[in-house]
Image (cartoon, rainbow, N blue to C red; front, top):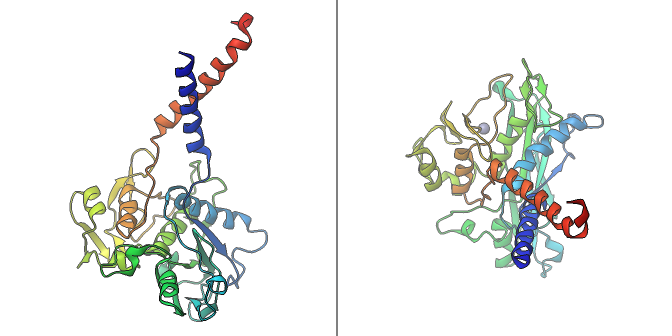
Length: 318
Ligand SMILES: [Zn+2]
């Protein structure tokens, strides 16, 4: 019996570590160098915090390993590269950063804001690049170790990062705690838009590994087809059909998908199973979320285990 109890305690401890330890996957590094209008600057910490909260969703669940991009320390002085992206604050200027260092398992995200055309709330996508050097260096820049990104059938992606831009002309709602649900009538939920644009940066509707699965305006990726129950109808080549519904990822219930083209004023959209399936079909590895009821059970059992452990030391108290 004692041995069994010990094993159980270890199991409970492992369950707690699994819940509380930092995720092993990727991390976004948000860079505000090109936020020339100061949308995220200074006292606007709630804006940066809400963006970080959106990033945390992917950081919690993405399990991919991405190689470091560091030309100077790549072992050959001929190796060089430049990260290229359109300035998020003017939408015109091509930025080219020679030998930007992107550390392992991180994505660099250049963030800005401007008056976006056509009623758009946000824009996001992966950056481009120029590279020269050894064959293995070129592969690292292209795929960051995600060999499926090298082809011949491109079924994975390993971007260095990219750029996001948010509209300056709308009344935003910046949530100080996205875990709680409150009403915010008349405002546009920044968290929802940040989630949506980060998914485009990861490759939803933008990566070759996603786009090769389009058949006209139907998406044929196997995970998405399994989730939807057939080929998924698209609004355009980068969004699910408007008002498509799916189960919340890591939550309870259903919701309009995050990756359709619109967001109702005063509402929030979290990521759904179908949204995750789209990114999984592009090559991203998602951890399966623990059902909320099981997480609660593990925590309660752990408390019981801790109490039990104390008993032999205080027999008079029982
Ligand atoms: Zn979009």
